[in-house]
Length: 456
Image: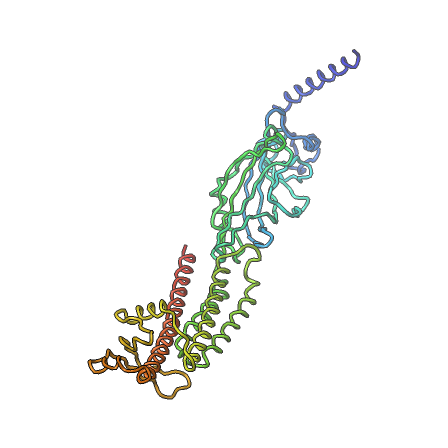
């Protein structure tokens, strides 16, 4: 019974003290007489300094309104491998302390004072994406007005998590976030608000940003949410910082050299297919392109697969394909001078359909060289062209069909061989022209794509 009475008496004393404090706080003013003659007297603020361990409110059921804003002054680094953005910003935190107020007329016209933050209660506003030790210098001051409005400005070097999308590198835009919230106070104790409009924050940051390096600040957006953690709700203000990479450096160091090597490789198709220097020239270009790919690895992001890496892989594949095609054509032209292999009927029909749609593929010995219109060709190892002219047999030649095979077999075999050689040569030239057109199409598509990405 005695312990219960003591608890009840303690509760009544606390309630009475709270009511007395509330009645005094409504009219709480600092006696600043003599400030204009002898300077600010610290003893006048001692009662306020003694309350710095508690949230400065008269009624603890009313949350403290804390307004925030910031100015982004520099984008120092964006690390694609670690998915981090390092920036420098000035954080502005504003709130009211009802226990600090004075009459400026009685204090020599003083409307604002600078007070060390170690003597004041500070709201614990943090950036949730912050991934480093807070290196804000200690001993900073806050400005206090005669109405009790406190403004605390502090410089911050922020290393924050940023989910980077490097698919369009180096024409990429990134959307990094700064989420401001309280670490200790729930919505029942502290409410976050905006000191400035987000458009004003964005315009000021774009004007004052000092870093003219790789990244450009495009815009800043803002949204307000509630964060629920362990059945408690916290106020959350999210700022979306949209930045864009300057691609000019990567265009000069990556795209232009690659385009030059591809153009030289495409021009090598003007060398004769029978030339012996064509294959070594392409091999030299391929080795040079591989050296280029090794050197440009330092400029490419280490994580993900950007579109430019796919482009380089396609360029390398096309150069390898052109080298293999050159080797195949050289081997084929060498082979037809000795023993031409039989050509599949479908390939022969396709070849004649592309070159002479009205002609038919007649490769069987018994049909002779009917319907063949072959042009003179020059093969490696032959000094004179082989003129293969095939015409339809006349009435007299038609009678040769009744002659013994021994009489007409050898000329027909020779004509058939020459016709087969001509078909393989035409096939090699057609493959060479097809790959050259593929080269031109790929280069035109690449240039159009790069121009579209750069312009947008």
